[in-house]
Image 1 (cartoon, rainbow, N blue to C red):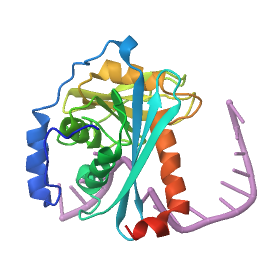
Image 2 (image 1 turned 120 degrees about the vertical axis):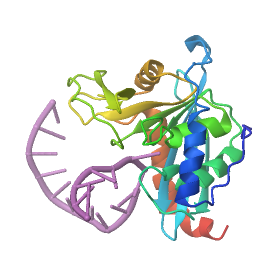
Image 3 (image 1 turned 60 degrees about the vertical axis):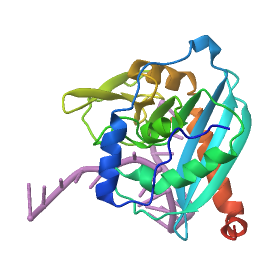
Length: 233
DNA sequence: GCGACAG
DNA sequence: ATCTTGTCGC
């Protein structure tokens, strides 16, 4: 089990959240701790909502490079923070943390359904959870939160930089030919170039890379089949 | 003040 | 994220 490096109070107001985010920024590392050859376990994390103010977090662990599912965990947590762009981790973080407690695998890289450092204060969901658990994390978002980018070329694998306040914070990556790009940014313990490369390594025939795509499919399954049962927990 | 705005 | 059927295109 992966133990959190620090315990953060998630039941805070936005002002405290801003302070926490600004403090977390100082702890982000960009040096990738592994040799590419020694990565054999990856994970995808998807966060979403259920009705009744329940947040759902799914973590799926995969073997690499086979990308076979080796573990799936999920948890539901009542949200006590509204959805405000820039504060997603305070809404979904508790559910993610709860799922981490259930995870037995030790993935070497985590792909998150959200931003890494491409965030108003440099601490998106991927970075926040990355710092909290001292893990390698990458933000893979379906839409842009902050910054500007020029349209990347149409072939799969093409990308352009996302700039924010004159800083290069991420990439608009064409994960499939001629589809809307995905927005990749480092979460923690990895740089932008490696974030792009690893994202491409786990991207198949779909726009969304396999780790988060599969995690999202499990989230859908949970919503369809197990909601009533889980609501009593 | 107005518009933008991960999931 | 969610409300929602068929349909146009690679």
